[in-house]
Amino acid sequence: MKKIIPILLVLLTLCAVFVPVSAESAPPVAVIYGVMTDSEFDSLTARLDSLCDTYEVDIAFIVSDEIVTENAVTEADAFCDTYGYGSETSKGGILFFVCTSTHEYALSTCGEANAIFGGDALDYIESAANPHLKKGEYYKAGDIFADKCEEIIEKYESGEPYKKKANPLLVIGGIVLIPLIAALAFTGVKQSRMNTATGQSEAEDYIRPDSMKLERSEDIFLYSKVTKREKPKSDSSSSTSSHGGKSGSF
Amino acid sequence: MDTIKDYKCPCCSAPLVFDAEKQNMHCEFCGADISLEAFAQLDKADGDGMTSSSYDWEHYEPRSFDEGEAQGLSSYTCPSCGAEITGDGSMGSTICPYCGNSAIVKGQFEGTLRPDYVIPFKVDKKAAVAEFEKACKGAPFLPDEFKDKKRIEEMAGVYIPFWMFDCDCNADIRYSAQREKSWSDSSYEYTKTDYYRLVRSGSIGFQNIPSSASKKSDSSYTESVEPFDYGEAVNFNTAYLSGYLADKYEISAEESSERANERVKNSTESAFIGTSVGYSSVVPESSNISFSNGKVRYSLLPVWMLNIKYNGENYKFAINGQTGKTVGKFPIDKRKKWLYFGKVYAIGLAVCAIAAKLLGLL
Image (cartoon, rainbow over all chains, first blue to last red; front, top):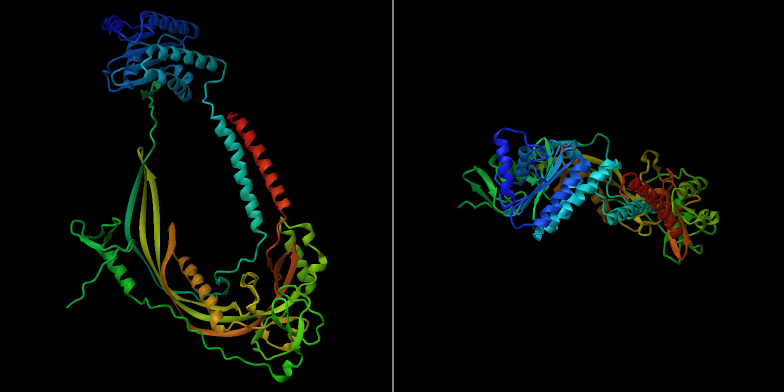
């Protein structure tokens, strides 16, 4: 808690006198002792500061060893709200919260960053950072987080928000298979017209008109069965109405 | 001493036990809970009137030709397929309508059953050829060389012998039916299935159900050219055979009635299912059918028969001599078939590729 304690004390003191915490005073990187070297910490801080200055989006990476709120999502949102991440920049912010004790993480966005970092973009960041979190490589996870944020912001600013590319093999497979099935079905239907000598299993043409008389008609209810199927829940959940985000575990 | 009665589950036939807590009959095997009221109804329905099926056809009294009637007729035998057909004594060379063999042997006409009725040919040979050519146009993969005019004109008009069955059918049928309802909330999707036993009993009348009396004619063909309009049936006269052939009957009314019984049973079950509305599935569980007032008649029905040999195989066709309905099995030109397949596939491939590009998937 070497780095996080003094930072939190500063922030809490500021909150205690009801001074709105500015983005400039909320550091982009806050981590517990031992997860990064000093040089890694400085490098990551400089990187995220630079991105914030360039793109006007607050990007923060927090590594803690406890969750004081309900879960990682509420913890990440609380960091954003309490310390004002994204409140001073024109395009909001994104915060990546990691808890080393519960092995949970959460991405929280606010402001215009909700649109910049949509579902596909958050999945992209998650899939890139998760393998490093699993190995305990928190600096690498933070660095990858910075890389992906920069890539996603640039795509957004070029007019094409990040969208997950479909698996090309699946797309090509679909393009090849769907018309194949359709062609087989059409050909099968046409081929069935080549044999019309199929016989008759019934004699409905020979029912004497108005001869049917129903003398007994009973519908006896036996019993009911109710089955239920749980709706699939996604791994992620959006936090509050003002925040977007995603969460998971590693 | 009273006999102990076994109570069986209507869904899985496992033994039922009385559930004192729910006051229901409970099946421990499939979990069904059936109210006592429903169970009493079911018990009563199963106990009422379920006798075994019976098919009571009148015994058919055959009639023979008068001496004068038989004078103008001859028998023809095909040495290739063994068909025995009757025809006008003045007919010249005749093609066998069943195998296309042209070397049939004329012989002495021998007494056979005299038909009760005949439906005369209404579609002449020219019209029959036109109907066949029309059917060829509707066969998408037909080889071009199959439509050889010369071979088509070898078709023969044959009166096929049929047993005609009339009956009043009494049926007592049990169906299993299900009704489903679905709904969902934020966490689950629910499906409620209600299980029913349907009891339907009543009567339905059938008339003129044809069943082929010829062993040579393929029933899938003779049934497929149906229906015939029996309003145009007339009392038999040998004059109607002039210029046409008549197949000899080889299947007795008793043997032929099995097919009629099957068709009546299937139609009765279908007709009664039609009275069950609002169910997602209705399946017959058991049916008891009995016939009464069963009448049998022997008739000749007009059919144009054609055999075409192509690539070593014999392709048969039948054309209803009254309505012109054409049935048969056409040969398939594999080149045409795969060409069609290729065209549809190419179009589909282009459409899917364009769609993928427009959706940004590629």
